[in-house]
Length: 291
View (cartoon, rainbow, N blue to C red):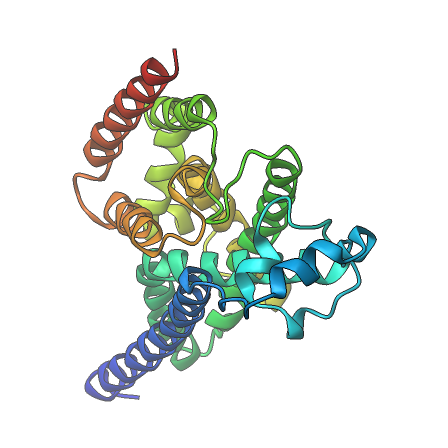
């Protein structure tokens, strides 16, 4: 294949991968926005006389652990203290976290995926094919899916301790301040710096991890490795969702933009430290209000 033809194919492949990433991110954000809007909608007003009927209701019926999620609005399903979680509730909240993580993290990993796709096509043209980009992306997303399980467990625990309000933000000023301070300090740690450098330099990451893989399992493992660096870079920022609200769409977008800037801007480390200082200052201010 001539150089001109190969360049055309590479451009086409990059366009296909970028289009797929855009579709994935848009669908994930649309789902997250739908949940946020559903939660923000006020409950339907009760008809006259209904309050007396509710007061007379047997309180044992309030334990609706086996209720079908399809018959309940989203806000009721996630409101802390409303009822004990059933397995369907845990699955619903996990799905919410997983989709949200896909929407937030896909833009920041796009440069590496585009690089992978371009080199993969060239390697195939040279007779040395590597595993497809999809296998690498699968490994990357696996890390964030596992994180979503942990985040769901954290939300369940905070809800059981009555530390979350219906918007899934902490009601405790002290806890909110501590999370902000911890996240801000983490932005200055060597671990954050190492993980951020791996996320910022796709080529450096690939070279330090043995390059591309020809087998799907190897590509998945490479994706997992990159996902772990990404998790090490961003987990503290994701904890901030419990401060501003897990379904606060502006808060979610703000964190996603910060993640994208840290990973793609040349001044990413400086952005990380400045944002960390601001987080710590905001946390200290919240703590001072509580004392």
